[in-house]
Length: 165
Image 1 (cartoon, rainbow, N blue to C red):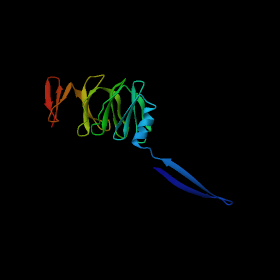
Image 2 (cartoon, helix red, strand yellow):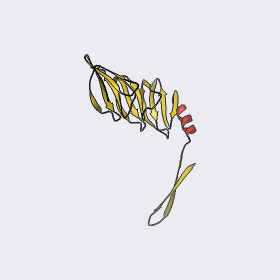
Image 3 (cartoon, rainbow, N blue to C red):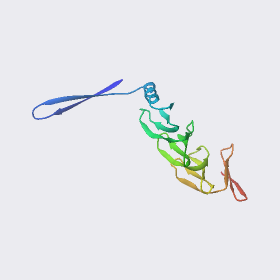
Image 4 (cartoon, helix red, strand yellow):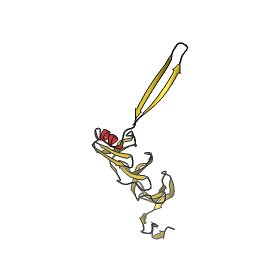
């Protein structure tokens, strides 16, 4: 459906009316447009994953590319509105607003739960936690982390093992 707006301008000698028409594309039309430009396209609730020459990027609900294809891999599901990405630097994350939460920099990670996730630094191979904004909330001091079925974490520092609350 087209949306028409009328703008009227007046000068001392004449009056002019200018009409501007903008069309809102359907999801099917956006998908067709993106498929004409990219090797692969997937729609996940109005966020489009796009692949070109082996790299993944993202377009918003209107089909505008917000993150150019730069990731070597992406998770296929959103967890708490966060998606895991992979790049040359390691594991990273984006949110559904198509903002990069954390650049690909981690060696490994778990899915987000309650606004946080365990991630491993590539350089030190130590584990810590970041929040859904990418901020470190628990320092990288753990030798290993395992998420238990209860949602709690088992963490190891040297010979000591702890279970989170």
